[in-house]
Image 1 (cartoon, rainbow, N blue to C red):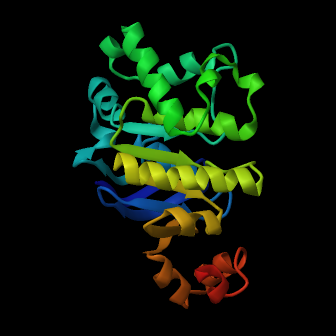
Image 2 (spheres, helix red, strand yellow):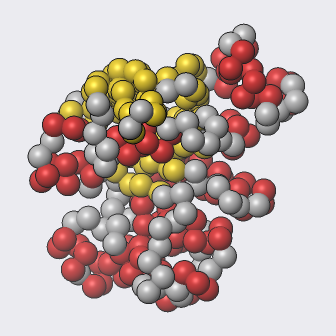
Length: 251
């Protein structure tokens, strides 16, 4: 389980997170919604210990992330796959080497046969052709690079997957492909997922629950039905940006 309790974070005088309470139960996928610049990615980075809170607690499997020593934090990160917004692939490495970097176990990483087989498995899982393994990022489309990034996140067999705007910059067709992939991986791998997005339609498709971050706080967490029934003006305003009416959203 992932839990944030009263998490606060400022950069200079700018308040990013202002007492965030947020819970993700094992086995579910939660979409973290909110306009760009509201601190969604900052929240994700707290979970993997890249950023420490000014106040409050971040817990993963009962461990206080900010209190972990370097070795303990490294062990925790073995459980967490992170899908970066821009893919974060290394241009000088081919797809095999980029994906192989996600194998956190040093013995397995050093085993050439294991690495080749495991990378081939996850490339197939993300619906990429086998020959893509020898290509370089510059030879791939934007959608393919996103899928390579997801392959790297799952190759180490994590318990948790954190997606930072996985469909950002993609056309509607490729966005649908990525959303479908997130949904399928949740079912097939049984991972617990958090998907940061401002795409309401995609969130409604893949998530078991939704959370809306606004003004530095989670102002609502709930199911699709609860969001559609909400009378909170901030919730309604955000949903209406993607849906003309609740009936359209539910269709």
